[in-house]
Length: 233
Picture 1 (cartoon, one colour):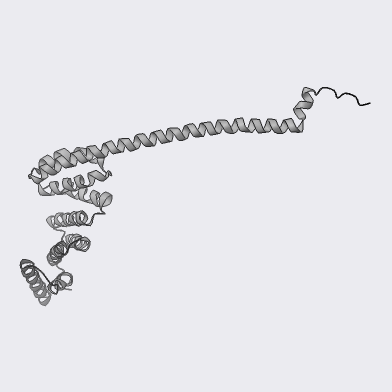
Picture 2 (cartoon, helix red, strand yellow):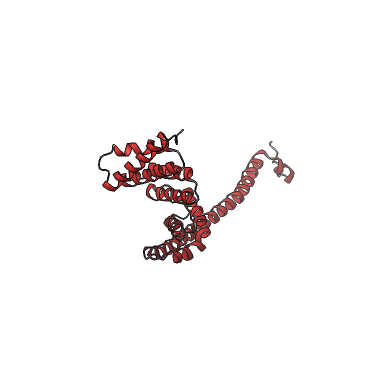
């Protein structure tokens, strides 16, 4: 006759393989549930923060766009000091925002026009570093650096900046004009051969405007005379 099985003791229950497996499963779920909850909570916080940052950046973009729009009106009226006063306090706040790119360029251009070459150079270079993808604006910034270098008597540097501007120019008109500036700066730097390398090809181009043709011919004649006089290497 089979004896009735005795009641399972707590000690046996504790060591029962099935219960141990169930216990481990439940304990593992509780542990993972805590981790999942923490992760989910952390993810939610990150998402909320991301939304807040996006909204903040959008607000900043709108504010920057408004500031640039107001400054552009002042610039178009020749109020360059007003443009500087409006934009310069916001450079650190708005730089990097897409809508502030034109504002940084306007600021540098205004500073150049009022004779603040240090501020203009700093902001032209900042524009090229942060927003230099637009070829039209980029070649304008490079040309601005060329003008500043010429003003300091650094004609070789000026020629290099004008040459870069010519190469990046998106239109034939700008390309030719900046090439002429580069040739002139090479002449002023005492480098007539470099001047001829950039100027002579312009005379072979079709559709060169009358005034440009005269300017190039005069510069070429001057470079050739310098070479004959021993001015070239």
